[in-house]
Image (tube, rainbow, N blue to C red; front, side, top):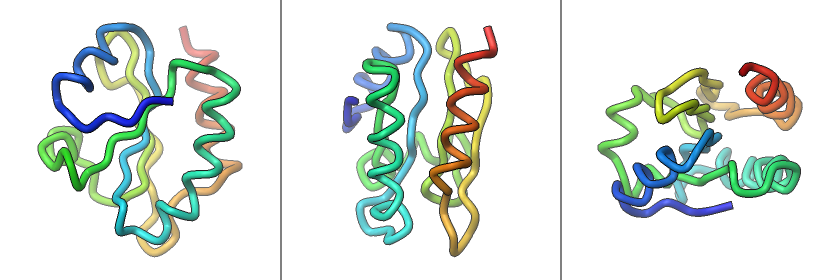
Amino acid sequence: MKKITKRSDFDAELAAGDRLALFYSAYCPFCQMFLPAFEKQAKAAPGTFVLVCTDDLPELEDLFAVEVVPTALFFRKAKLASRLDGALGRGLSEEGLAAFAKACRGAK
């Protein structure tokens, strides 16, 4: 799993293939609680999961209309294909991410 800190790295990751990106903030307690669940899913599909810290890349947060962190976005052929938005005051669940990741892998 790669942590993205520059726009050029993000663009390169999308060009390399399908990616499931977690948009998060280092200061968000819901994000910090959720990171282990994301890391667990990333181990099941090495090289396809990336972390995007909105503190470093607020322009990507705006570009993809990420209003709540954490939010997971799935990119196919460098285009946003699907999203799992976090819930304000709750974040995301491990079960929700597992179902989302499975659906993304199955959608060709």
